[in-house]
Length: 171
Image (tube, rainbow, N blue to C red; front, side, top):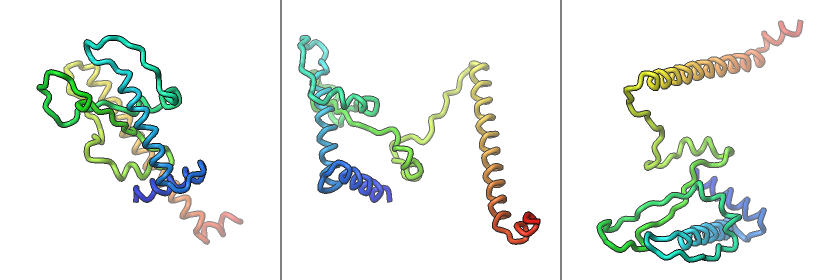
């Protein structure tokens, strides 16, 4: 289902940008991302490397918005080699969140390697522990209130469709 939605979104983007298909638009975006990633990699200096000025990529400023969504990761390899190799470090862009219109689909289709929640570490500090407990209590009360409001709105919707209720309200 998520793939179908993505394909539909790429088709819409393709229509907006006058591409022939969603695949073409997606491929062009992938190329731009890879060029940006490569430009950043070229500008990063290895330890002990002489400082040189490198000309920035033509569209680098326009693509800077991607930086918060990119992360470095080590690829599978031998970590004990003495000379660092370009193939050891690879930058991969990772979107932290989908656009708001796709948010509900994102919740049901989370990847296995993405943690669903971060748990606080146990701390000996009583103030910190109290702060965490208070936050959990507030979250629980907000959830209870949210459930009550949902139930109330559902009950009102049922009443508005009830013929007897409408009859008495019209008098």
